[in-house]
Length: 106
Image 1 (tube, rainbow, N blue to C red):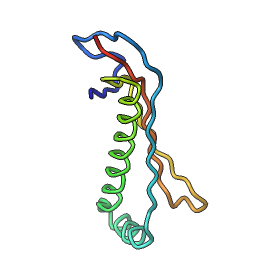
Image 2: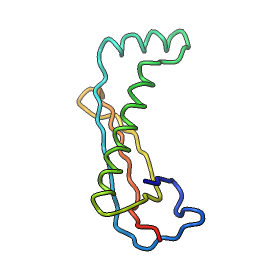
Image 3: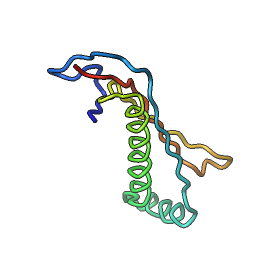
Image 4: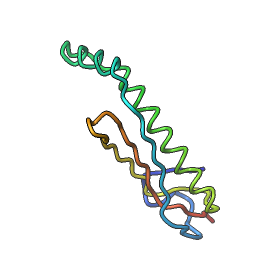
């Protein structure tokens, strides 16, 4: 399936708009990873553990949006947007939402 942040796909035209589709992923941040990430932040390094969590959450949200679009009969998603939010009582969870428009191309 073609997934793009643009509103069109070069060389293709939209035959049918099938509606807004979305995918969500929520991941918890583990306390040990939090502790090591805060140490890295103090010394100015990158937090590889958080980067892995972000990548995993993004991939999960994209898998879900693609499944949503496929159920609608789409062969592409245009106008993809990714949003990241911290949720939970103590901000201990990360939510990634992918949204876009499911379309059938001609």
